Image 1 (tube, rainbow, N blue to C red):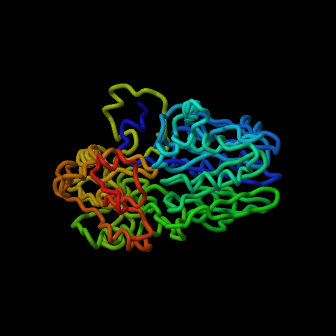
Image 2: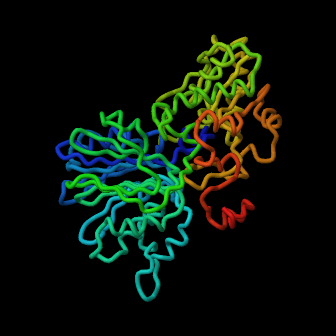
Length: 480
């Protein structure tokens, strides 16, 4: 168990992907800094693949980007195009063999591939991987157990006389679920986004090249200019001839609503919506829906800060910093002692006693999953002298698991199903509890509800989920 796992009661941020085609640039370092900007989306492993036009080199390992790569390693990864990946596992074990990018042979060359999201039709895809008369599935020969390896295996199973673009345009329509892909051969960079656009993927321009990334913040950090979103159902190819675009599926936008609440960096734009400003609006709406008689509004840093600013502004209650976050706790491979384990949340957050003592607090957070973190946090605030603790959450109750790339708890582990808001407040020890309404969240985001996926809040899955999961949850998908 890692220190982050001891107190981790938040949804995990799936993965981050990055790709660059820029002759004459140090593409491995551009990719490193792009991944660094996307570190919040995955902290288990990191990897970079680079091509010099003749061969692909892949380097990946477990840990944070800064732990996996150093100056010497990056200097050895020379070329003019590269892809990179930050991983948090939503499918497949958290082990080295599942780190990305994956690599496989395709035709007479190589293919490196990185993926963000989660496929929902893996059984059907695995059935396509029959490689001989004895019907031995190709998946049995894969050296990893995630969706990315499955996509790589599919692409490598095609006849060698087909181009990568021809193969991709045949494979991509077969994939169901949420996926953003960046992949490369020795000479070209490719990217694709699922027809529903569940996860973000953007295109940027360098002076002498192109960049694709999960978030606009990754473009900013390397000095690339934002061009546009890669559209749902779009496939792009970039090589010495320039950029080409094709649609492989009819778009039906269902962007993840939770990206706006928690997953994306606040300095990112999604669907032309600045995330920080959106979260401030959510906080304003939260204050109007669930006011409180209190002395101070404090956020649970960092993700609760913009909504807390909005709540304070709308309510007129002063904003304060009552909790200090340890920015360096990150992911550690050191097993904590029992004494340290009992400290729990204090490894990440510590109260400013002189600020909160004697105060009635409004504590703004982005979500409640199991409730363990909030329970420990409220206990800690009371021990530090808070007289009242009113919890306000900038998302509706999380009642359903996600099958599109966020690692929520199972429904049985979630605190919200089966409990009223008052019962949840009692369970976590809060004086009161308020969640922003789903309609209020939609209004704050400013996109039509039909263009967003809110399945974790309302159980309405816009893309078919695996049959076994649907049966377990009692969901009829026939009319979905």
